[in-house]
Image (cartoon, rainbow, N blue to C red):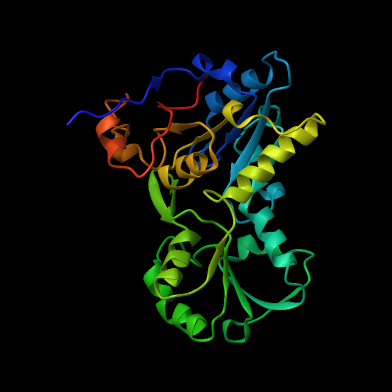
Length: 295
């Protein structure tokens, strides 16, 4: 069987002029969980400097379950220059908006203490699981040793009491130091499987794209950039590429991310091979593939 080919880019420069806005993933594109990718930051800086009828903008769109300031601190630590982007929009930011729609609720935080800033300043009371009116899942308590199976009993109790969940990170896994680490999306998926009600904050869901495009327009007191001139760049088929496809914007898949093993760009294989067969088995396809985001 032959498969329609997806263009492979050597450099983002090949298509940069087509776009006014990049909605850029963070983990897997700008860093791998332990170190920053300098070339990716440089590519975004060069894109923002391109001339055009309207300024070129970059909004970093992250499924991190914490407010944007926390992501910026991490990027600063990895050496990602602030000149590479105009703003950051996170799942944590969207989660805060969802929580604010239910003032005064008793909320259980299912996730590590490092994600607690998502609740700062909001009208809620953090309570034990058995007292919760709503659960906010930001991740696993220990993503080094636990899996979603460790939460089955807790989820069953929530389901019995019809406690709704906000998933503050729809990712199933992320790459950290060449390993795949489980995320909140796995727990939310397990909750849905037993009939639990889940609202997801972040990619691949439409509100994150609408919010990011609106932010880009507000910088210049212009309407949001056209859909056709907005491109999503990311390393995950399920979130970055599927979300872009559903929203109606082009997408570019960064191969050296969570799908690196499947695409043959591991440490032992330094170049990107034929990807059309792999892509043909995926539910959605990007408009192009690039090994790394480089100019």
